[in-house]
Amino acid sequence: EDGIRDVERSRGLGDVYKRQPYTTSTDHQEDGDWWYIGSSSTRRRGTLKTVNASVIYRVGFHISQGGGSTSGAVYYRIRRASDDKILAETYVCDKSDLNPDTSPTWVEADIGPVFVDDQVRICVEYENSYLGMTNADEDKRPDEYFTYWDGSWHNSSTVDCKYRLYTISSHVM
Image 1 (cartoon, rainbow, N blue to C red):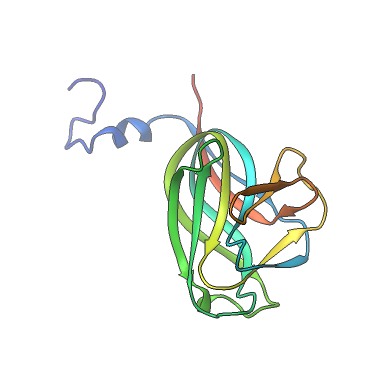
Image 2: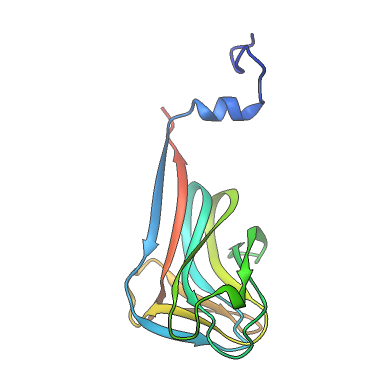
């Protein structure tokens, strides 16, 4: 017994983390009913925000097929804003599995888990043509930005996308 691991058949560092006090939370922006169809040149869209010392384990967006081609892979990715490095990603579905054009719904997926203490882009990224996404047509969260890629990243402070972000934050005692 080294005081760190359970005596019976240790499973490694997970045993230590399970005993740490933590809080789970859902960060979200769920206001808005402005349905937006991203073009084939803006296949990365989401929110730019700062996440402080948290583990992200699930992401959701309010999306639909959006027209054009009804097939193609849809991914959720978390990218560090400073260098565009992908910190976590998950395949969500084929676009054909999404609701038709004008019927967006919440689509959530497990991602990571990944520890984040930085400004990041939490995005839905897709192949082939268009994707529908619901946004607020005004700035609902002044510390966040709607972000999109069309060869380079752009941020808008006048629109916010609808998203859900599930995190775990540890407490230092």
